[in-house]
Length: 323
Image (cartoon, rainbow, N blue to C red; front, side, top):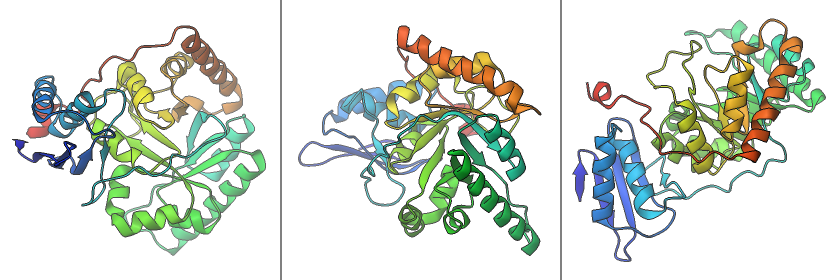
């Protein structure tokens, strides 16, 4: 049953729905976590989501969710075979304030300020040479040692093979990078045993991230950000709260979080971690206590008056995406 170009709805003999996506944005099998729902119900929900401005891949996610299991998102495969979710990680601590830094020296500064979750993000130049590779190895080694000494959780951005080689226990990857690994590369990554943090900006990316049993799923950008140029609309607090409720894994809020009031709001939405980049300033020791206080206040507010997440809004402009 072709509902839309690239959206092929199928129903097995036992009544289970699944949907093959081959749209502009996503490719793979979308399968519900419970075998319920009808083709007609899916079609109605799909058309409603398109009418609300969602691109086809996200409209299919919403249709599958509302038709089959309103409290649980479906899974989206990374490859040609329908997905089954990897066992979810069982972290022993909340991620709390999450600093992203670009050097081991900066890493040591934020650790000294009391931050216990850190990402080392050093982007490769267009033509990395041997000197750059040696520098990167040294920065990762120094960061691993500093985090081990501080009892902090480190996620190395992008360079996962090097991270595994030098003893890092966590890595953060974007979805395009994970997709480019292919089935064999994803199996190799899983075999390292490193905790995985993964980005998500849309409903289909959230469904795909769930398959990997990640340590956390990042939701962003929550507010407009100058750190990266992206096509995504700000998620806002409504989408963040929906992510926290539906992800099935700890959620990290990222994007445009500069002041304590935004840390408070992100925590009140249920974020397990709140990512800070420029907001730490030149002197993290002076800033971190205020941010930590805002984080705890947000969690207390959530415990006292829990937020009821509304339905999500589109994170891509469907008209621009088609153009």
